[in-house]
Length: 188
Image 1: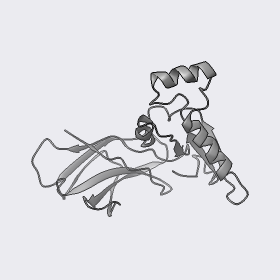
Image 2: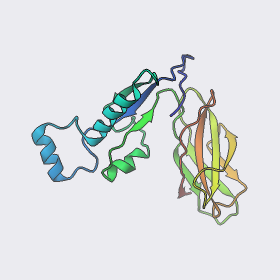
Image 3: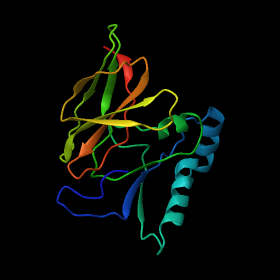
């Protein structure tokens, strides 16, 4: 989830978007034939999951409102839920429209033998983007252990060996909200 504050300063912590695909990503030809014969384009497992989320989340105790978007994800974006869809699991992406997005094109430079680590990524175009943070953790750790604020840059070199730890990069909005972490791919 991202920020609940819009560009104009309006706060809405009780609304969220949920992207849910129609035609399943992992649909087999036999499943496609069945779907086409019964007109089930709007009844995929992911859409059923989205309907369940709406039924569960929208109540007087939470005050939440879920806006289901009938797409797999936002334009020019992709999230972790797509890997679940490819494996045939129902999945959706929760987000809201005003937060900084996950950095795109994240690369950990592996073209030279060095004892430090250089990371690169593409700068997002969100109007509330303040900068970025590099995160790292031991290879045996399940959660990020350290956060290094690096500012509004698209490349940074950290005095820590890429061979010893895992790295990630995330965006930070002016209001302090943070994006999901991008796990960099090896590159140059």
